[in-house]
Length: 264
Ligand code: LHQ
Image 1 (cartoon, rainbow, N blue to C red):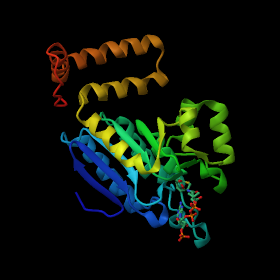
Image 2: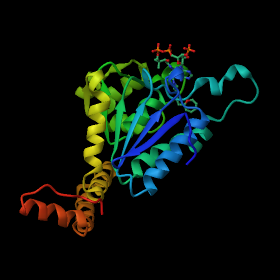
Image 3: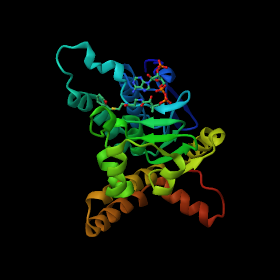
């Protein structure tokens, strides 16, 4: 894997930590950073040693979305095809997070704006520093929320709040985001990374197969009827029941000891 500076990548105890690393730009995405994120997430898909992902940002911000200097309309010439940018970079990024059959924890360490906010929302469990803010900045520059924002916002917080956030671009703080159900919880700034790392570590030591199937089932609920969902649960439970971690989990329970899950 190429060692890139725009995304720091390290695996320890089953957790792949990806740290967005353009702190001077509040970790806004340029093309190089997109490629580095893609590489990191593809590794998460392929490497059995990776059993959970922790995504965070370096410096005072989490991510300010697209680097607007990279798409400067003042430079003249042909107008950029932003749809192409989504097709090439943002859409595959969101799909890589959602389709990963391992948990993705996001530690939102500071401001999350534009696509940066919606990348955070695509993760499975989101913790945010109390000082962090979530901003659907798109309206300020005449764009439409992307990176799944127009899907995740109404699903998570309902149409009324989704529209207000997207149309006004008003920031909300971490506490409000947690109270609304946009994220899991707000954490004291100093405790954020330790708490998120501990959570990711716990998940990485868990029954990876079952956790991955659980993620898939919950994500399927948005487009399934109850009947379809019950059938899906049947199929996924069948698969989970054939995992070694199920056998280990039950054995450990009956033997009154801690389970030693291998992820198989
Ligand atoms: C930045 C950025 C940034 C460059 C801060 N770019 N430098 C998809 C398809 C294709 C194209 C378009 O976009 C998309 C998706 C999107 O993400 S669109 C939304 C793009 N993001 C934004 O509109 C957010 C822009 N940033 C801001 O509004 C503010 O920076 C926030 C509210 C995030 C933070 O404000 P402050 O805490 O006051 O920090 P700051 O504004 O002073 O920023 C610090 C530095 O970071 C500053 O650079 P400088 O050299 O002056 O210190 C900013 O220019 C730079 N920066 N965001 N997106």
